[in-house]
Length: 102
Image 1 (cartoon, rainbow, N blue to C red):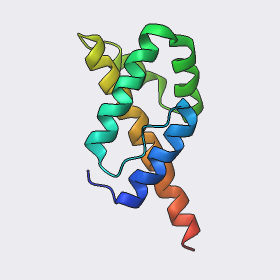
Image 2: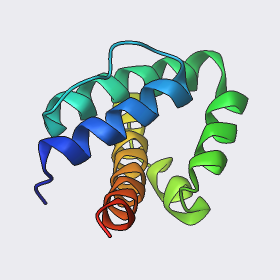
Image 3: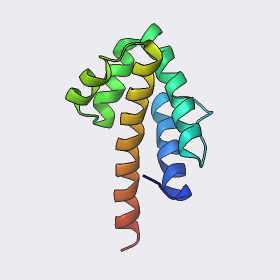
Image 4: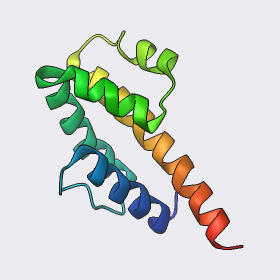
């Protein structure tokens, strides 16, 4: 699924605030996925409780997270979780844009 640069930028900006990092401002979905995967992987190793709190706050479905955790490697787990996070933030960004344009 392809998203507009404005939607990606909005989602990336929100994720930057949520994860308290400053390197997620991108307009390319693949780059955002790679960067966020690294952040998630680091949190899996160092601060799982904070990551779980963020997932709850973002409103990622618990069942999807559990499914993502079944991946074979830590890198795959991080990438799958990052995909879920990005998907949810893009949904929220899309909703924000819909209501702004009314």
